Image (tube, rainbow, N blue to C red):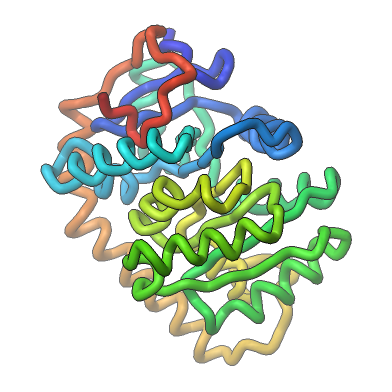
Length: 285
């Protein structure tokens, strides 16, 4: 049986240096809502573990190890606790071998939609931070049309020139803090979004930050979800999918092989010694 971690009875495994909290989707959503309502000190940051995540934070490359260690240090300083969820069915093979149970993967689309459903139901205040200003209006229209009873959500976009400068990144967090959010959905891409949350998530005063990668941009493209609004030219939608396929091909050919090698040689169950003080991304010690 996998060792229990800081989130109740949720077992934990480490795949290629990356810690995963094995939870059903309902349990993960319950944790997010509970933390949002209780507003306990510190930040609960929710990350989605995929092969791309293992590439950026796993044990297969020296630079990824350094990235993980830097994030862990920033997270401890900023009182950020990471809930890392299985989000890639390709990783299910290893979790099954380690625990004897087939755990479901929770996609960013599922997590974001369910978080929005719960926010509307519980009257939680949401904010969206994404990297694509050209899609912001589409995202606003889609959220307003799908969750019309949601308390007025707030939207921000930030590019690399803002996020990679410590002072401007901090100023962004300060602006967000003045809106008294309950949940901040962050879609800046890996590893930039994890860096920003670890360093500045606490300054936003949002009790929960969801690291969602490209999910917010996907929600803003009408033909990536059922019932999407019309209006985006077909050529632009087609270009989005060409880009998406190109990214996927690059990941398969260049990034994922090293991740697979690390998975084969460095995956195990975490012992029950793990405590609630573990704030790390990937569980590095």
